Image (cartoon, rainbow over all chains, first blue to last red; front, side, top):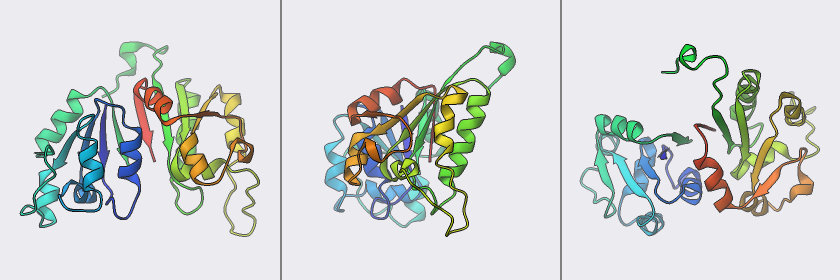
Length: 100
Length: 129
C-alpha cells in the first residue's frame, strides 16, 4: 500500500498516525507540508529513521524545492521523486491512502 | 478509471472509510458520513474506522442545540439498516482520549493497531479524512 502524508509533522498527527498504522512493506510518500518530515535533525527524524527497516520512504522533490529545502540533507534512505515518480508509485501499489 | 459495465452490476469492492477528525470543527466527518451512505446505497462492502480524533464522532450524548449544527451521530446507529455492519475503533485512539466502548453511541469492534493494519491491507479502496 502507498500512503501519502501532506501535513507538517510539527502541526498535525497525520504522520504519526500513518507510521503507527502502516503495515510493514508499505511505501510512504511525503508531499506538500509533509516534506518537512523528510529532513535530518528535526524532532521527528528519529521516529522516521526508526521505521526505515519496515517501510520505504519517498519525498516529492518539487515540494522540497518549493520550500527552499533542497540544500538540507534528507534522512538517510529517503528517496526523492518527481511527479512522474509519484505516478509510478501509485501505479506500483494496489491501493493508496491519503493521511490528511 | 472505474468501468462499471465491465464487471456488471454485481461488482462489489471493499471500501474503507477512515475517520480521523472530530465531528464539528470541520466538515470532514459529516461529508464522510454522506460518502458512506452513498457506498452503502450501491451495496458495496463498506468498513468504517474511527481512529485519532475520529473516535469523538461516535461519543454518546452529543447535543448540538446550542451551536446550530446538526447532530449527525445518531446516523451511525442507522448504518446497520444499510448493511454497513463493520465498524472498527482503534483501542489506542480510544484510550488516549480517556474513553472506552461504553462511551460510544454505536456497537463497534475495538481492535488493536496491528489488527487494524491487517484490516486496512485487505481493502480495495481507502477513503481517509
